[in-house]
Image (cartoon, rainbow, N blue to C red):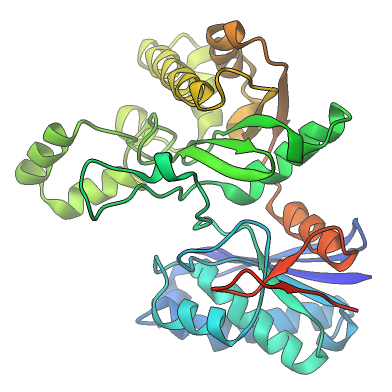
Length: 359
């Protein structure tokens, strides 16, 4: 079975072709800022990116008709389950007209739609960041018409939770696994019985490479009044965290600064480890402390001293710790598609709970 994987980002479009679970090829198409500046809206980039996708596939010896299925990074559709959702009219309409966020990943399902328009192969998105299945108590807030939402690294944390269960020779649908993604943004996800049961998203948890993380409400209001909404939005995504404190969004640079005994970097690392440990600890009571495993992923999982500081603070939970570094997005998408096509997982229609099967 040949699977085509498409994953658009803000300045690149990543592609891969898999034969079952084996990667046959991977390509990253760069989109220079001067090219993207020609477009007023992200959605206007569709024709431009699609042409480059077809050209890249052709150069690699593939045509759209060569694929048995197509899987895309999910974009930001609201109110969606984890796992695979069929690429149908309802899903495409909501991504085009009312996505939860304007983001380049919303182009993925649109590119996939064009590919399968040629091939006729089944297509779906898998584990978008807007996956929304946290439990009712976790969703509750102190304002009647405002609800907590998950918005986290669903794709990678779920894939690593499944891998962790395999390593332990257990069924992940019968486990409680906390997965910590450390990268540009940090998120802590509790996967319970195969469901994203609760989360500490990047804007609630500790700061990261480029995000300021959670800030007291009164302090945030005061900051907006003093520095303006646009400046504060920058702190939330892109200009907070290590960018604000140390002038870099690269945790490898921060690690090198720590190893060189830069006092500011050392304090930053200690504080981030302290905060991540608190986030992990705040999810343990959700499952009465019965955590079966704790897994670190994302680029920051390769930073041994950082993970070591966190691990020492959470040893009391008694759960085995696994390190599965990297983003793993392309592999996670392809593996999800493989499980679907083999009948190991159901496929959802957007907006309903009916099961969709493929012959």
